[in-house]
Image 1 (spheres, one colour):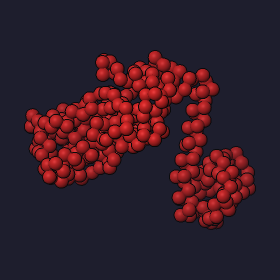
Image 2 (cartoon, rainbow, N blue to C red; image 1 turned 30 degrees about the horizontal axis):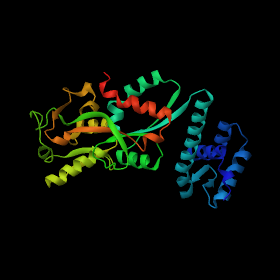
Image 3 (cartoon, rainbow, N blue to C red; image 1 turned 60 degrees about the vertical axis):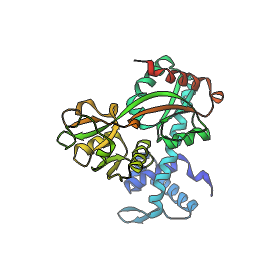
Image 4 (cartoon, helix red, strand yellow; image 1 turned 90 degrees about the horizontal axis):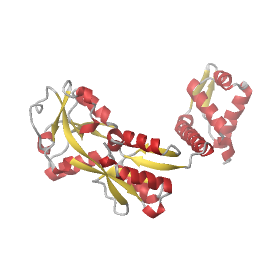
Length: 301
């Protein structure tokens, strides 16, 4: 297979055609002739050995192969754009970049202010931050794909050098009219009697709840699973269940009006978030600067 057929322009033309299903519109948007657009699409199909579109009198229709190519083309173009942006940083005089992955809890509660302050003090360092679950972060650190990771304390990390970042408190979030709303505190066994809204598979918080459920020998009644704390709050507001999440992840404006939180009387309700690196000796000076800064953030007000 000739990879030159997968040049960025051809992939952009394909995605535009997949969106509009009209080559005439694509040609106009891309300031090309219709024949040039059609030729590139045809050559791409020839190289792949399959048809991406069915040509019809009133336009195009995507084939199964065409639908399958969309996500791959989007990922390739995203990677190219990311590469261009990173190289531009070097061209503009930035010293380097630090690859940082962090779990949802740290990004929602602490990292925005911490990284903003770090960037003020180190404007020449580019921070490449991605939100990932704790298990993926440990894997990436072990494989050397990132410089620094921030993850929860209930994920095994035997080969990682780690340091305290922050601690947070898990609470039970319920609608104001819920039967549990008058309680001053709750044990986890009280929560297990109700439908729960939780995070998707792979999240360290979900694993914590699953482990506690196994220990209590009572199954979790997971009614809805979503990808963010904000979505959990919305589902609880809609009456789809109750949830357990970090207190500082709950928007203050909804507390007391539509939802209330109740302290969770369990030793695992106080969590530790760790900063991890594969090896201190392998860090670049920029990554080491960020690590030292984040290690000191528990004392920053």
